[in-house]
Image (tube, rainbow, N blue to C red):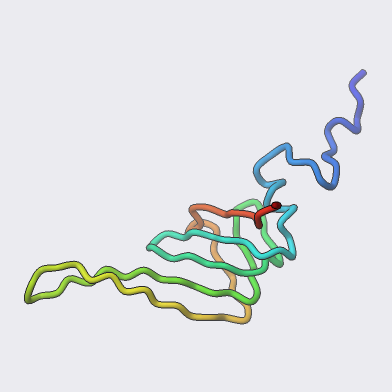
Length: 101
């Protein structure tokens, strides 16, 4: 008979990728989104679709404009801050937990 406790992860165990996100609750994380957007904020909640609720968020948007006269690409970086943000999971490319150095 299998040990029933073997299927229940410890509070600090990482057995599936979603466990790593769970361990990052109330921690500052990095999120890469579609459309050259990046977020850094405190993870307050998430679900299996990777919908996220972040607090104290800094959003970085990278814009590439083309100069009409010279046809050169000009890269602009726009930053903005939000107290609270809901992120829809289908736009999430990557979630990075805080470094555990």
